[in-house]
Image 1 (cartoon, rainbow, N blue to C red):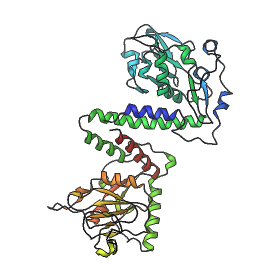
Image 2 (cartoon, rainbow, N blue to C red):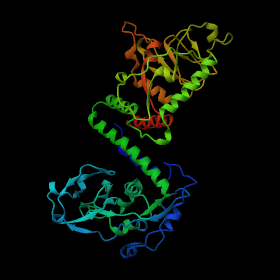
Image 3 (tube, helix red, strand yellow):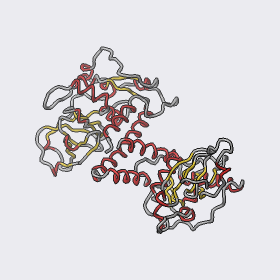
Length: 451
């Protein structure tokens, strides 16, 4: 099983050390934010220590260390309200409604919940953090006004500091460790306001705060999908792995970013390269296939992706016969090139002027539809189909997606199954932009390594 909690902790640790995102020279340094700090309330002023704190760890030069009470209203006197005085449509938030790491499980209205006593009112956009059993990491951003248990502290951030950044920091491994060392009470441990007001916070420039939050939330969203899959397929690791790959090829494990461009742009780039290689006689021109129809499309993909046929973006060639002198050195009797696709002296020698890496599809017998990789010069026997992606698509994505297509289903149904290049060329494949291809590979590699 994939330890998603461990991955989340690692993501948060990197994020708040400045190692998850890039630092830009165009970002206004965080010290400028510090110079515009909100005036301290009398209560926070009393709680804030005059002593300099020791910096917990190194951060980028454009960042600065501050105390939580300097950038947020944590510690101010909360607004109280009686539960039976609120409108029936009011959102009532309790601790059990929040899952660890900032996920809201349910939203209940006063009309549907019996609630008595004094509550804390909160506003849309405020951070809500549980001071009770803080090791459970219960924190969210309010998306509307409401009331909550007094165990949840509602507070604002100042000078445009991103509240989602602060919320995520409060559930990070460093804060978790620091708070657990300071919380009091055995059965129901709590953390006191004085400690939280003086909690050191690594503060990046405003634009980098946005980048950090987006990266964290994209990753956590993908991990939530994985948690759901693991719950459904907990008893079968292979099925779970297959479901993760299925979600990857549908675009559900990665976020689509405008700066990636579109698959159509990548497709046109591939067509230009194919035309160049055809003109130079390095690849053959494929027979034109019919346009893809709506009936052929097996599932929905993101708007900036594109359905294509394999022959639209790759060049496929099957292995050919060559002589022993093509393979062996006359003096040493050693192979000139690595061998792929089976034993024997028959094969296809790659052309040194092709670019990038090659995928190889097993086309006969037990290896039918299997994917392998070759780098540099090699020869492939008649048992393999050589896939050239022109060095444009990510080669790991190429192998991953070809493998996920289960190409052996297109093999001839005989005692010795075989795959014809013509059949493979017609198969549909969902094409993402190049940078998303790389994120898909990175995400899946991380997840599958932790299984």
